[in-house]
Image (tube, rainbow, N blue to C red; front, side):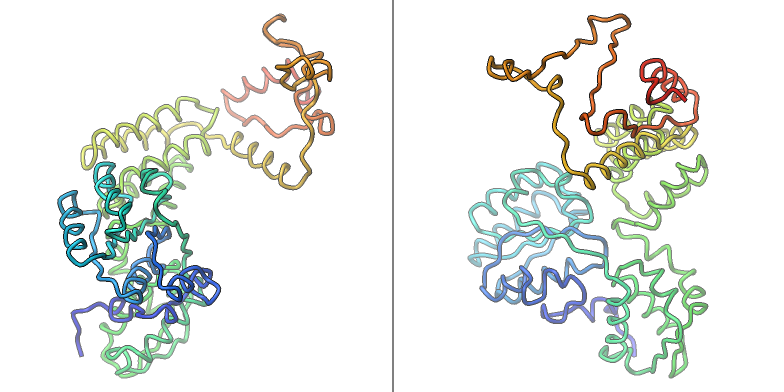
Length: 421
């Protein structure tokens, strides 16, 4: 039996009770369940990784509040498409507009939604794999409820595949024995669509009435098709991980390979550029202060030029960062400081460091005994800037590279009590 409809689409849940995962939103105490109970549906942005249920939840919400739903993909839709849908929604009184990958809409495209959302002509449901606070304009974001969706855990995925082989009209024509599932779960990476695609591939590749799932079988069959599962414009956690680790490991060739995999697979260049900006500080830092300048310049170039020419800018930045000296000392330092703050009570600011804009504050010794560094030789004076209780504490440990050795020397000359070793 053959169907042109993919398994993942055939098994899309139609009721909120059938959704696997996202219990924080869908159980009886969850906000989405309560929305449906009350028959109220605000504009929503679902933020989460691929295959976690964003589209399914949008469809369920639309159906259960009895509103027509129009769907657009931000990859190929423009302002005209948005206006056409809004016009159709007005004719029907009100409708849901579902926009997949809304983070790909530019400012003018997002602006075209504002008035209709404000007037209640459409209920907007956007789906994004990117942080909406970075990618959705503030006026539109303020008109939407943002809900975070999580990758499906292994228990969710196992529950899904056992349900599918029993309920799908095509798959249940054969018997499945799940002898091993590690490879299935590993390749799925929390993505329901991906695990169903792999399961369907196994079904289509077998002529036997009983299919025994083993790790070896899954790896053998998936190896031929895994690149196809990585395409489609969604966030590719496995590839971006390999990309970042290749740059961190100073391998420009591997980094360029993974860059090409992402761009050929439809990845958003701005997502790649943003990760380079993060890496420049996390993995290179003050070992090469130019790294953050190159990375931010690359991000600006990507925004200005766009795909496909911006790949040239990305390539230059990737090679520069991969071949740069590395240090995570700044990153480790701030993580240590944050951990300390979380685990200890807040220490009071020493009086000599407090602001003293009023006479009363001066009488209370605010700012007293503060010494202005520029009034002293070399612009430095030895006073304590940490709270008294943690005086002398050290979070930052310079890395073992040329630039940070200079930083260590600088600190040792001034803070011999902290760095005089």
